[in-house]
Image 1 (spheres, one colour):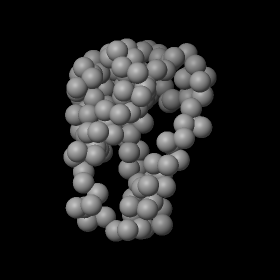
Image 2 (cartoon, rainbow, N blue to C red; image 1 turned 90 degrees about the vertical axis):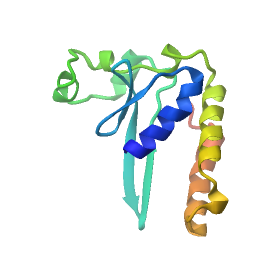
Image 3 (cartoon, rainbow, N blue to C red; image 1 turned 30 degrees about the horizontal axis):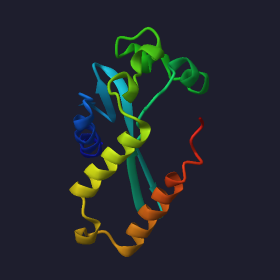
Image 4 (cartoon, one colour; image 1 turned 180 degrees about the vertical axis):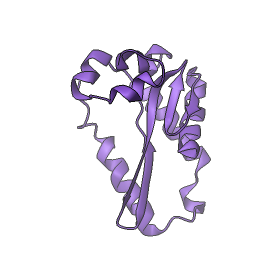
Length: 140
């Protein structure tokens, strides 16, 4: 998780987001969670990534999520809404600016043509990227 989170942190720096890694799988800004790492193993492939909160209303968010009380009280919060923040709380950047910045950073950092990824792995990565490029998943 630390490796993945570190890349997201570095990608956000030029936008003015001063984030840090918080073990085991979180990215925080001023102690509030802006991202969480995820890991999934399926079909002999390990998928890893991070969620990233761009512009979230915590009241709306927690109508869908019901975190265990121990999870947020152990971090010193009485209410889980206190624990989360969004990119828009820390940077004046559009959604497109943020996604472009992250894409540019990852493209510059990881050259797929020189990687040890197999053609199958690259195909799966492209398939997953295509899933989000059309933005049909956005709820605006």
